[in-house]
Image (cartoon, rainbow, N blue to C red; front, side, top):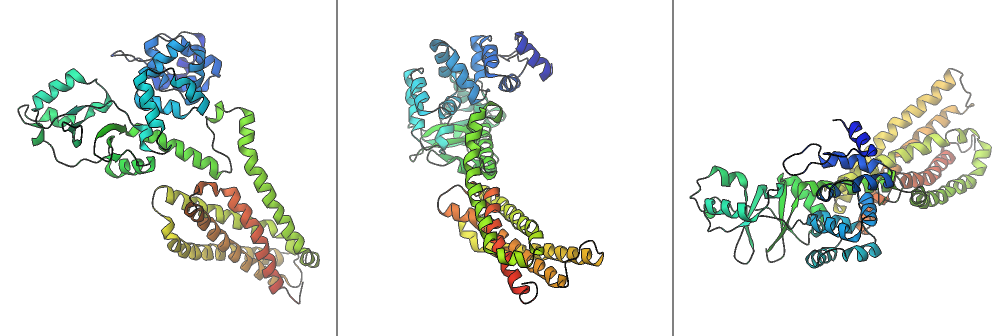
Length: 458
């Protein structure tokens, strides 16, 4: 069954066997959720409500936060409570994190006492803390058990889940000693003791660490699950790679939106109301518009030069756009390098040296093209730049070198300055860098023109 057929069946109400359950999987719930996320909210909620209670719990974890909120609003409190209480701890924390303070207060009352306390404890940690991703469903054994005893203990006390692919060895106080892949329990002699198959190498996360640090550890050690401990090494839970991937995707989405000059969206684009989209975009547009007014001010300052040599105005878009483009390129490279920990603020001088060289070379390349363009147009009589066209060509050559060099330096240094000030480097958006270089580029261009053309055109 393809996704189109699934969508048609959802819309028509023919929903039987669309969500996998137990040992009879037909369609993976993520496929159904993907369809529901694209439907109008009312239709999606109505379709969701036709599933059995058991399948609702399975499916709820896969739908987006926007639709999750709509579903909980639409369901009676008893049914909504059942869904929220039966979610995994990670999925429950994720849902509550997406709510406003008022909504969070309301829906916390839907939870039983244990889940409510656990959720409140996690919500007390910073938003970027790994505590927000902790799953408290994990399997533990003791080091003095035999492998046979450990297997029997696991069968009796732990569910068959992906998290059980790694088993954790703890002492009597619950302190983490080691992690053991299930394959070691299967491939070793059942009579062996657990401490005989322990290797003593256990990569773990501290509850106080950030999600960025968690992402780095998953990448560095190529793990699918990592344990989370407190300062005393007590095992508090685990984090799975799929949860980390979700966080990384959300973070990258926010950074891309900010870099494009848009405030980050709380919900997917298709679920965000038009009024909210306007609000998210208007702020940056107003700031950039007001900043661009400085361009008109700068041109007004050089009004005399433009009046004497109108030909200078012909090349304003050319030289200014080159600076903005080079600045946006540099900003993109530096922000990404800092995001993946390739660079830090301490590397500013290293970055500056590289960007000075890069900017000078790129400026020379573009300046040469600009010089040849004027020369070719003059030679072929496509446009007459006047008797002093050579000086005009040289002006463009040096202007492009200066503006592109300034653009690359601005684009590379602004993110680092923001990072140093503990601000998000992604806010140094491409439009922001381009606007800054537009204004300063005009000053560079007309200043060079004033020097090169003095006594001739000026």
